[in-house]
Length: 282
Image (tube, rainbow, N blue to C red; front, side):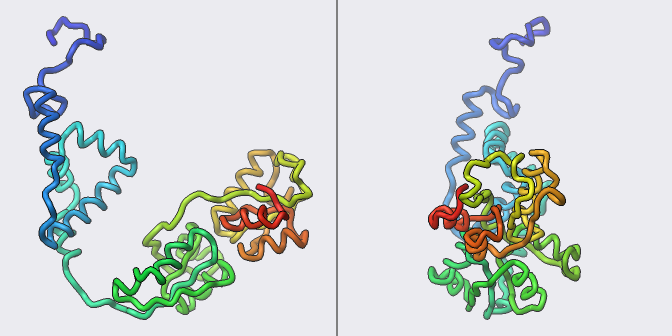
């Protein structure tokens, strides 16, 4: 493009060469990308460990995969890897990961609540994933989230299935003594629903729910926050216009059937169970 070319024209090229500035043409740029895309087999443990570290860092920097691909298409894999190494010690992290060490503890107790998002914890036992890593794990069905919290605080459980706000609440001492907790993995997101008793099938508008009694799995849960937000958006005060109480998910359908509550916001399969039993609707 010359100095006097129209920069707002879609048919005028702003620069010669490619978008990364390292190739003479766009075609040469594309050929280089294709050559880089041909992955060499990982033949050593070090290369495998390095790939794990690189994957972890790239996922953290680009949580949206389309953005990662667009970045790589623009600059190329080699440039991206070099840039990554300037902001994160890839080599050091690889060495740390590669250092083998004996397991700190092999016999573990892991608590869970029988809901859908506990599936990875539960099924890892019969599928042999724990034993494959040299672990002897006892997975323990637990009555409710308060029990989960108390048993982990009392060190009866080595790890536990928890609602996402619980580790933060325990760490800052909300509802219990402050104890630092770590959340190493997220098992599931979404999948929650509001279920009402069948007698309210004509009252789908939340503006008509004043005076309702609702159940949520735990005070420190996304279910509680979502329900409060939903009610507030409809003009209701969650603290004064309705009652919200904590009920363990396995007991929610029975409470709905007994008319102890008008509805609940909970994870599956509790909602589907209420529909299947004919005592509620989503």
